[in-house]
Length: 255
Image (cartoon, rainbow, N blue to C red):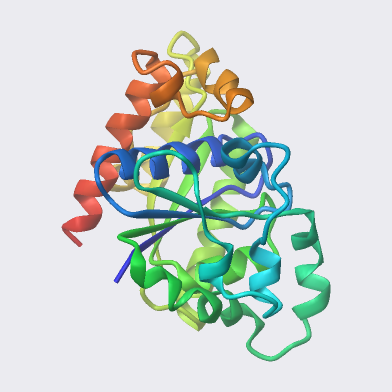
């Protein structure tokens, strides 16, 4: 059975998509069959990996029953990495399904057969709390929160932690907030170090994962439809995400 992990943050521009794409890409490079499911109506992960001209089947087609998940999964050109893309049509999911009984379980039902072909399923989630995010949490096993080292982002982390606990108590007892990943870390700023300390105190050292340093190569990579591993493998961004992925893989396989 695939290990299902979700990268979450209720705020845009939080490094969520960058982290999901790089961790999924690194797992593929390491020989793990990995599926990246783009659950964000902005479809940035899909745009990044498939390009602007992609017009194929997407997650909304799967959720509405128009297509099977296996029909909407595409190879990315990277070793071991496939994607189930999103499109702007996904923004209509909440309006269409919010009143339907068991709507939060629909995503899992639609993906159940396809996920058997993979070692990991990685979810890039929408940057807000709603039915889509709850659907991902209902089907996932582990949650990783990306955290820009800014004061207001910490408040969003507390809200996400509360949501994870609520979903775990009502719909998915296996769900865990497994890791907090500080991103866009500038080691020269005292405020960042102070926030790191506060997060460790509040959530515990065991959920803290390595920080991802600020690095221009990470912001340049999407335009080239590549990860930093391909575009700038010696860059701090590539090195940080490789180290992060090794730690995630090691800890999850011991669970």
